[in-house]
Length: 218
Image 1 (cartoon, helix red, strand yellow):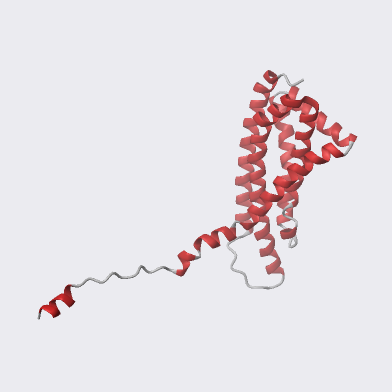
Image 2: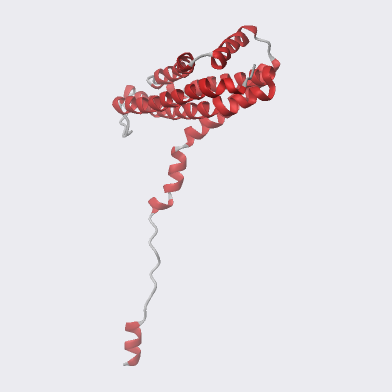
């Protein structure tokens, strides 16, 4: 009888049930971020390439454009600085938007962020070469924080382009698709990203117009 009682009161530890979905969650999450990581790496490379291009090339026309832009950044008021920064970002943002509406946009989505980072690298090379440490200080304090935020927004937009382009491609080929994306969602996400860019440019233009003259870069 005691043996029967012991068998009944003995507790067995059950093995925890591990769902396959939980095992693959981290991998799927990382896999879903692959395009953002790729665009980020290409963008970082673009900054270095832009700085190197300034050093090894002598493009007088591009240097003149960069110099004119910096003159506005250094001597302009809030309105002129805001308009300049807005025009620069708006060009890349519109290119990115229209790339996403093309069925071949998936292979072209890296272009806007790469072009912008080439410009950032070229501008940084110009400021360092012309104004040395003051140029670097101007970049680090006033320009690069804004460029980091707006370029990140552009990378997110490029990521949206890949999925939107794939969705359009599948629709044109008559393939059934379960992509959780639509034109409306695509536009809403772009509006949100552009709102972030506008807010960042507004703050940056104010800081440059207020702090820029105190650096006395020229």
